[in-house]
Length: 110
Length: 116
Image (cartoon, rainbow over all chains, first blue to last red; front, side):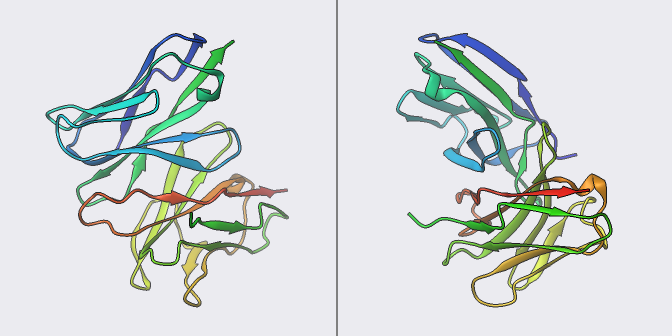
């Protein structure tokens, strides 16, 4: 199975709070991608991670890929209403085209 | 910035009818994809296409589905005889390369297909 597990399924946070979303695979992740989707719209690429231990940041969003390359986390610092949406991890697994986790629905309360 | 465009944005069709969903991938990309998302569910892989042939397809992509790149710019998904359960958002995506795992997919805004 190329299943990617994301947790939590949904998250409600108060504006200004930090949060973390996780993505776990039972297989080695050769490329790990984070996307954001607003309701009824396409997927917007956020960040890409390839190397074990790699960490990338963009504005207030930081993503990490663990050393074993089987888990990634997305961390948002000081959340804002504009961060609301569905966050999906996508992964290149050897021999398969990109598959996605089920997504984490983030609500940020002002 | 170049983008993937999909038409139409919304398609309503009757059960049993054929539909063609159209996509224009980013011009220098080599790999093309279709995904679908049933309302409230996950984004599911349908098919990938490279060098004018299917490179991978999922179990969803049965004989009712076909893809084509009829010219140098368009990429289409055809459903021959639509069923109610084909109602979903269909996303086209493209990427520059795949082998080095360092090229993200770029997605279109999707076509919402409603089968009545």
